[in-house]
Image 1 (cartoon, rainbow, N blue to C red):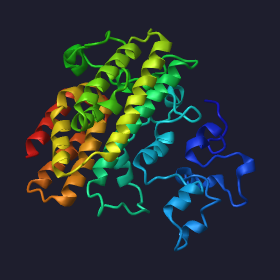
Image 2 (cartoon, helix red, strand yellow; image 1 turned 180 degrees about the vertical axis):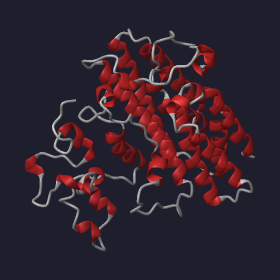
Image 3 (cartoon, rainbow, N blue to C red; image 1 turned 60 degrees about the horizontal axis):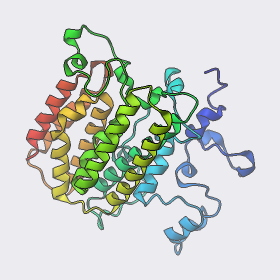
Image 4 (cartoon, rainbow, N blue to C red; image 1 turned 135 degrees about the horizontal axis):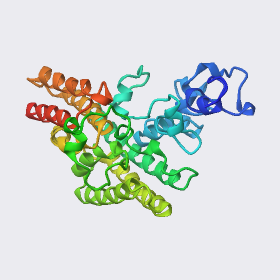
Length: 349
């Protein structure tokens, strides 16, 4: 990209460090701290000292400028400013071609591997991890739709980072050995790279569980946008309008997920619903399959926390087998992944 050193390039520092104007930096500011507390929690000058005192409340911190990460939608949104991007900081196809990894995200999974420095109120909400997954899926779909709207009105269209990377970037095989050839190309012209549906493929099961009417409305809107984006020569203003309108629906659903009554029965229905949707999810490609594996893992961890499962080891092994199929994107095979999903589904009794 002909950038200077990565540790001084604003394009890199936007996410990989706390990069703020010089006039906003305290004397102790050090960019080499990388992703620090304020990257997630916001500017701390008004609350850093007081928030550790005994009488100080979380609400006081929020009023003083702290980002309210107890709000799951706000938490997801904050994570996604880097893990998906904004108008100011983003990973586009040019950066991916230069070597930056493609971006993906699943709130519950990403939280699980963080050094946890906060307490989740599981005593008040035993199924908070399921709620976090649901809200995270809603918010990442909303933010993807906003990005599609921005890019449709930008200088470069199509922005290939919005599409399914592995539709193009995979090892070529003889047609007789290609799962893509065997699957076919319904709803799009062969050769046109499809829109990346990974941020919808799992969420559609969650919406169907909470509000079937909204699920049908969302599916119709997503299918329309999918056709417009995948056509590659669609009217950009129409694409932006469709993406913006659908983002509004996803935002409403994020709020619904915040208040939805998640419990043991619903968590098991979600496990069965996602693993039972094997054909649709796997045929969308490696990225939706990746979301399925992460979601199923997160859901089962949450389920097992409160329910003793007799065949838990078999289920864990079946989920692990899903992740194994995702280790090499070129080796991904939709039919084999679907077969493993169905095997897992059969264990969820």
